[in-house]
Image 1 (tube, rainbow, N blue to C red):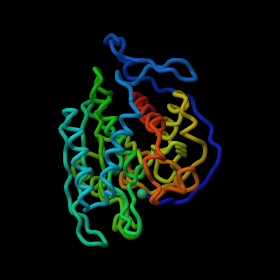
Image 2 (cartoon, rainbow, N blue to C red):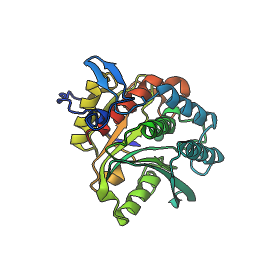
Image 3 (cartoon, rainbow, N blue to C red):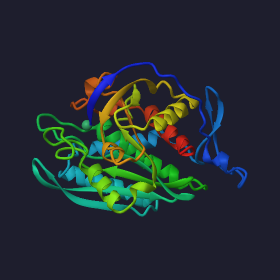
Length: 323
Ligand SMILES: [Zn+2]
C-alpha cells in the first residue's frame, strides 16, 4: 500500500451499538455455547460460540514466514497459496480460485485470489480480505511477517471461528485472500500494484456481485505488537469507521484503534471507487511504532503479538452483528 497523506487529529468516539449476533438470536435458540468476555465495560457476549485465538493466528504467520519471501511468481508464494487452500479445505470450506495472468512491468505473471464463502442467514455479502503476497526485494530478505503474513493468519483464524459456531452469521461472508497487492517496481495501481483486488472488483462488477456487498473489511498489517490503527480516511466509508471504532472501544481495544487519521491506497481502493462501502484496518506504517520495520528485513515474527491479532479478530467478529 502507499500513503496518500498523513494527518493526525482528535476524533470523538460515538456510541456503541453493536451486539453479538448470538445475543440477537437468543430469543430463537438457547445460547448453548455462547461465551462472554470481560471488557472494561463489563462482560460482553462473544459474537460467535468460539473465540478468536491470537496464538492460532500467529502460528499461521509463523508457518508462512518459515517459507521465506513470498513474492508473486516464486515457489514460496505457490507454497503459501497451497497452505491457505489446505487450511480452508480442512474447515470444509468450498474455496473458489480466481486465477488470472497479470501484466506487470516484469512481464506476465500468473496470480490467484482465493475466496472462501461462509454461509449466512441472508444473501447479502460481507467481504473480509487481506493480501498474501509479500513485496519483492532482491537486495535483502523480506519475509513480511506483518506485511502479508499477519492478515493471512488472521483471515485463516477468522475462517475457523466463523465455521465453528452453531449459529450462522447474519449475512453471507466471503473471506478473500488477495494476490499481487504489492508493486513489483513502482507503486502505480493498477499498472503496478493492487493486481488481485483490481481484477476481482472488475470481475464482480461484471457478474453483478458488487451490489450485494454490504461492507468490505480489509486487513493489512494488523499484527505488530504496538499496533496503532488510525482511521483510514482516503477511501474508507465514514459509517464503517465509526462502527469499527465504537466496537473497539466497547471491547476495550482503544489502545490499538487509536486517534488520528491516515489515507492509504490499498486493496479496498478498487472496491471503494466502485461504490462498495469499505474500510482498511492497517497499522500506521508511516509514523507509528512499526514504521522503522515496514518494507525492511526487520519485518519479522518477533515484531508481532498474538494480542494484536486477537484485538482485530475480536473487533471484526463483533462488528459483523451490526452490518
Ligand atoms: Zn507492503
